[in-house]
Length: 165
Image 1 (cartoon, rainbow, N blue to C red):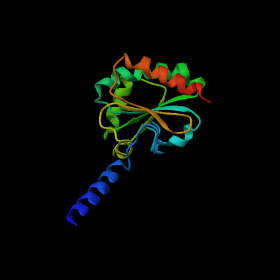
Image 2 (cartoon, helix red, strand yellow):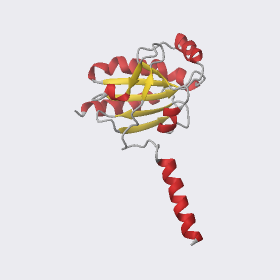
Image 3 (spheres, rainbow, N blue to C red):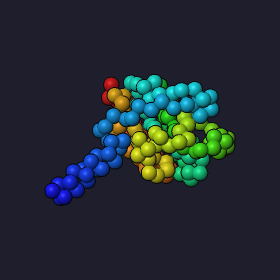
Protein backbone atom coordinates (compact mmCIF):
# COMPACT_ATOMS: atom_id res chain seq x y z
CA UNK A 1 0.00 0.00 0.00
CA UNK A 2 2.87 2.37 0.83
CA UNK A 3 4.40 1.80 -2.65
CA UNK A 4 1.12 2.71 -4.30
CA UNK A 5 0.94 5.87 -2.18
CA UNK A 6 4.50 6.85 -3.22
CA UNK A 7 3.77 6.23 -6.89
CA UNK A 8 0.59 8.32 -6.77
CA UNK A 9 2.30 11.15 -4.88
CA UNK A 10 5.25 11.16 -7.29
CA UNK A 11 2.87 11.32 -10.24
CA UNK A 12 0.89 14.18 -8.70
CA UNK A 13 4.01 16.16 -7.87
CA UNK A 14 5.35 15.58 -11.37
CA UNK A 15 2.09 16.77 -12.91
CA UNK A 16 2.04 19.90 -10.75
CA UNK A 17 5.55 20.86 -11.91
CA UNK A 18 4.51 20.43 -15.54
CA UNK A 19 1.20 22.28 -15.17
CA UNK A 20 2.80 25.60 -16.08
CA UNK A 21 5.49 24.20 -18.34
CA UNK A 22 5.64 25.82 -21.75
CA UNK A 23 6.61 23.29 -24.35
CA UNK A 24 6.86 23.20 -28.10
CA UNK A 25 3.47 22.24 -29.50
CA UNK A 26 1.56 23.64 -26.51
CA UNK A 27 -0.46 26.88 -26.43
CA UNK A 28 1.51 29.83 -25.09
CA UNK A 29 0.30 30.94 -21.64
CA UNK A 30 -1.93 33.99 -22.28
CA UNK A 31 -0.19 36.78 -20.35
CA UNK A 32 -1.60 40.20 -19.54
CA UNK A 33 1.14 42.56 -18.34
CA UNK A 34 1.78 46.29 -18.07
CA UNK A 35 3.88 47.93 -20.74
CA UNK A 36 7.28 48.84 -19.37
CA UNK A 37 7.29 52.52 -20.28
CA UNK A 38 3.60 53.53 -20.35
CA UNK A 39 2.22 51.05 -17.78
CA UNK A 40 -0.66 50.16 -20.14
CA UNK A 41 -2.02 46.60 -20.11
CA UNK A 42 -0.90 44.40 -23.01
CA UNK A 43 -2.02 40.83 -23.58
CA UNK A 44 -0.72 38.07 -25.81
CA UNK A 45 -4.16 37.91 -27.44
CA UNK A 46 -3.56 41.40 -28.91
CA UNK A 47 -1.06 39.74 -31.26
CA UNK A 48 -3.45 37.02 -32.42
CA UNK A 49 -2.81 36.04 -36.03
CA UNK A 50 0.83 37.12 -35.87
CA UNK A 51 4.07 35.23 -35.28
CA UNK A 52 5.35 36.48 -31.92
CA UNK A 53 8.82 36.25 -30.44
CA UNK A 54 8.24 36.36 -26.66
CA UNK A 55 11.55 37.24 -25.03
CA UNK A 56 12.17 37.20 -21.27
CA UNK A 57 15.06 39.52 -20.36
CA UNK A 58 16.64 41.57 -17.57
CA UNK A 59 18.97 44.56 -17.42
CA UNK A 60 21.79 42.47 -15.94
CA UNK A 61 21.59 39.91 -18.78
CA UNK A 62 24.80 40.14 -20.84
CA UNK A 63 23.43 38.21 -23.87
CA UNK A 64 20.47 40.64 -23.95
CA UNK A 65 22.93 43.35 -24.93
CA UNK A 66 23.62 41.32 -28.07
CA UNK A 67 20.03 40.25 -28.74
CA UNK A 68 18.20 43.56 -28.47
CA UNK A 69 19.75 45.36 -31.47
CA UNK A 70 19.43 42.21 -33.61
CA UNK A 71 15.82 41.56 -32.58
CA UNK A 72 14.99 45.19 -33.28
CA UNK A 73 16.35 44.84 -36.83
CA UNK A 74 14.49 41.55 -37.28
CA UNK A 75 11.19 43.11 -36.25
CA UNK A 76 11.71 46.07 -38.57
CA UNK A 77 12.45 43.64 -41.41
CA UNK A 78 9.47 41.32 -40.82
CA UNK A 79 6.84 43.50 -39.12
CA UNK A 80 4.85 44.05 -42.32
CA UNK A 81 4.60 40.28 -42.75
CA UNK A 82 2.93 39.84 -39.35
CA UNK A 83 5.87 39.47 -36.96
CA UNK A 84 6.14 41.01 -33.49
CA UNK A 85 8.79 40.95 -30.78
CA UNK A 86 7.38 41.17 -27.27
CA UNK A 87 10.12 41.50 -24.64
CA UNK A 88 9.14 40.87 -21.03
CA UNK A 89 11.45 42.48 -18.48
CA UNK A 90 12.01 40.72 -15.16
CA UNK A 91 13.82 43.46 -13.22
CA UNK A 92 12.30 44.22 -9.84
CA UNK A 93 13.49 47.81 -10.13
CA UNK A 94 11.91 49.48 -13.15
CA UNK A 95 14.76 52.03 -13.30
CA UNK A 96 17.31 49.33 -14.17
CA UNK A 97 15.32 48.36 -17.25
CA UNK A 98 14.98 51.99 -18.31
CA UNK A 99 18.74 52.52 -17.95
CA UNK A 100 19.38 49.41 -20.11
CA UNK A 101 17.04 50.78 -22.80
CA UNK A 102 18.97 54.06 -22.97
CA UNK A 103 21.99 52.02 -24.11
CA UNK A 104 19.96 49.57 -26.23
CA UNK A 105 16.88 51.38 -27.56
CA UNK A 106 14.26 49.33 -29.39
CA UNK A 107 10.93 49.88 -31.12
CA UNK A 108 9.31 46.55 -30.21
CA UNK A 109 6.81 45.97 -27.39
CA UNK A 110 8.29 46.04 -23.89
CA UNK A 111 6.40 44.61 -20.92
CA UNK A 112 7.19 44.30 -17.22
CA UNK A 113 6.89 41.20 -14.99
CA UNK A 114 8.66 42.36 -11.83
CA UNK A 115 7.33 39.46 -9.74
CA UNK A 116 8.35 36.85 -12.33
CA UNK A 117 4.84 35.38 -12.39
CA UNK A 118 4.80 34.87 -16.15
CA UNK A 119 8.44 33.82 -16.25
CA UNK A 120 7.40 30.99 -13.91
CA UNK A 121 4.45 30.05 -16.11
CA UNK A 122 6.70 29.97 -19.16
CA UNK A 123 9.37 28.11 -17.14
CA UNK A 124 12.19 30.56 -17.79
CA UNK A 125 15.36 29.13 -16.32
CA UNK A 126 18.05 31.13 -18.13
CA UNK A 127 18.49 34.62 -19.52
CA UNK A 128 17.34 35.39 -22.03
CA UNK A 129 14.77 32.73 -22.83
CA UNK A 130 12.51 33.20 -25.82
CA UNK A 131 9.50 31.49 -27.30
CA UNK A 132 8.42 31.68 -30.93
CA UNK A 133 4.63 31.55 -30.99
CA UNK A 134 2.84 30.85 -34.28
CA UNK A 135 -0.24 32.61 -35.67
CA UNK A 136 -2.49 30.17 -33.78
CA UNK A 137 -0.84 30.90 -30.40
CA UNK A 138 1.15 27.66 -30.23
CA UNK A 139 4.79 27.59 -29.13
CA UNK A 140 6.94 26.42 -32.05
CA UNK A 141 10.42 27.05 -30.67
CA UNK A 142 12.14 27.70 -27.33
CA UNK A 143 15.53 29.39 -27.33
CA UNK A 144 17.87 29.74 -24.33
CA UNK A 145 20.64 32.32 -24.23
CA UNK A 146 21.74 34.39 -27.20
CA UNK A 147 24.82 34.89 -29.34
CA UNK A 148 25.02 37.01 -32.48
CA UNK A 149 24.99 33.89 -34.67
CA UNK A 150 21.62 32.80 -33.25
CA UNK A 151 19.74 35.46 -35.19
CA UNK A 152 20.18 33.65 -38.53
CA UNK A 153 18.58 30.44 -37.26
CA UNK A 154 15.76 32.35 -35.56
CA UNK A 155 15.19 34.42 -38.70
CA UNK A 156 14.76 31.24 -40.77
CA UNK A 157 12.32 29.69 -38.29
CA UNK A 158 10.26 32.87 -38.14
CA UNK A 159 10.16 33.25 -41.94
CA UNK A 160 8.92 29.65 -42.23
CA UNK A 161 6.11 30.36 -39.76
CA UNK A 162 5.21 33.62 -41.50
CA UNK A 163 4.86 31.71 -44.79
CA UNK A 164 2.10 29.59 -43.23
CA UNK A 165 -1.16 31.50 -43.39
